[in-house]
Image: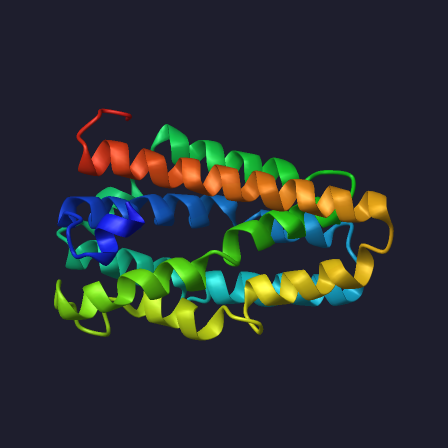
Length: 206
């Protein structure tokens, strides 16, 4: 899906579907920040609360800019908000919330790292096509350039890596973190597979 998107060959229906599924993922995954906070050190809590505010800020929420991109591709905000994500999307956010309730907060943070650290690479690949082939205005594609600019070393993924490096001081804790980063990457790509199969290939996953 990403390679096709980067070439400007992905349908607008699939891009609308991508934004729709991103909305259902983020809006359902928000409780993870508090699940992590319940058992984490203070500096970890500060980062989680900062991330929560960015995702849900009423004045400029990440959820809103995803819906904006969906609307730019023909989606209806009310239908998306009142709808339900694909089973592959639901599997992702349910697994993410499961990770966040593990006995060690490291599982939840590592899961976030596995998700957030992929965004700059993926979005930087599709941004040129969004601008030059699909001809979106910058307002409609804010989600993409915002995450490319903000999610590097100082973004959510980078902050999570710093915390894991600080607290994963034994081989056992390092193995725990690596396990959940890997699980996160697997589930995010399953989520992408669902989008591509349903919205691009027409397979009725819903």
